Image 1 (cartoon, rainbow, N blue to C red):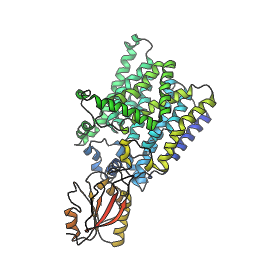
Image 2: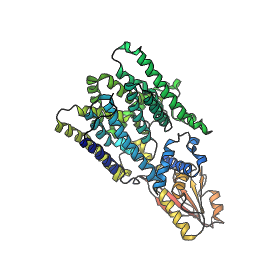
Image 3: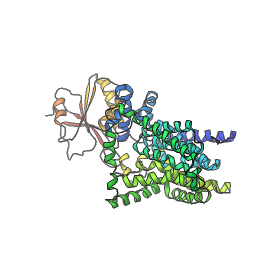
Image 4: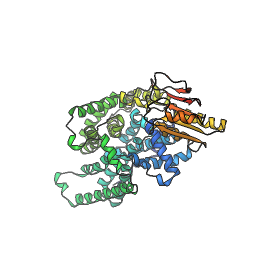
Amino acid sequence: MQWFPKLKGKEWVWILGLSAMFLFVASRNLTRLPIFVDESLYLRWAQIAWHDASWRFISLTDGKQPLWMWLVIPFLKIFKDPLVAGRFMNVLCGLVTILASGYGVWLLTGKKSASWWTMLVISVSPFLFFYDRFAVVEAMMIAFGVLVFDGAILLAKTRRLDVALILGMVTGLALLVKSPSLFFLLLIPAAYLIQLRRPKDIFTKETAKYIALVLVGWGIAGVIYNVQRLSPWMHVIADKNSFFVVPYSEIFKDPMRVWNNLLDTFRWHFAYTTIPVFLFGIWGMWLFWRKQPKEMVVAKAWFALPLLGTVLLARLYSPRYMVFTTPYLLMFVGYALSWIKSVRLRIGVFILLSIYPAILMTKLITDPIHFPFVDVDQGYVNGWSAGNGTKQIADWAVARIHETGRPMTIYTEGTFGILPEGLELYTDGRVQGLSIIGIYPINEIPPKVASAHAKTDPETYFILNNTVPKSVPASLELVASYPKLRDNPMRLYHVLPAAK
């Protein structure tokens, strides 16, 4: 079979132009949205792993697979701002998703036009665009998922050992990104449907050969995944997953949970994918079924089955946990556009579908604080999980130590997350003599340990990020306050030396 489409010069120009445009747009104003709690954790883990090889598996202490942290390390060496490093790496993951999705559609359908339109549609998806500019693992998981999708189709069509080996390695790396990548591994055999002409074709030597190759790929993926056994913390992954996922035996014990998850799936797609695009994708499924039914079933399996599994199993559910299926929905949109006969009409429909997504993407670039997040995503810009003030306080602390020449101690409300990890992230390697100590819970303001320390060290400070006291004692002097969208500003206080 032909592994790659034969591209003309203008088609190469088109691909390079789309790639350059995406990189230019997606890399604008990467820090306009303040750091989020999970970003501070992931980037701090990457920073620690960079400086100390014995902590390369540090993310496993919280049940998170380590590949994203490993791959962000080179970007930490390039970019001065660690948040830019993590977010720019995800921009590159977004580009991989665009290119790999176009390639996958060509492999599946043989239509270059469907490939081009799919790439365009994915490049203007606000749902994917947000995570392509956000330093969490989702963008990388999405990219690896589409690469596994491509490899699964290639393996089904070629039944070659080298393809199985490459597919196994890619799948193993996907499993090192996030646990739901297991869906990708399990869906690999679904691609073989495109090779079956009659039911009796299942019981052939070619099928047996294919099964053997799939098992080889699965075996390699398992070996790569088990590299985490080099750390004594691998077992925490299962413990962490049990917090977010219900046991199989309890899936239907709470029907309202499943129903609410299903409704939320539609609500979030309507909000972020947008209603016109979503409905056009449903029409694309129907058109795909009429034109190429076996190929449609394969693509729909990659979209619907992981989504259904997530809806059934999710104890805690948010758009982050379903976004990885979005490229396959958008493949149907691209496929439907490719069947519109009139080029002008095709372009016109694409423009109409893209108007509102383009507005949302512009908002993400220019004013993400006021982006119309759904309720469950308000934590990105509000509350304890939003990090406005983290970098500002870190810069102030570094400047203050240089100015005074004295060491400083900062006590923070919280022992895990934005505080203290976010503060450590932004001050790492920039100054000597800064001690950051997390405290939780906060039983009194200021904490006794901070008041006691201030008696001997006038450079003692305290940060509140969640608690809003009715009154602030005289022993605290407000240095700065950094508002969020609505409430819970991050406040930096000087703990006065005379405090008792």
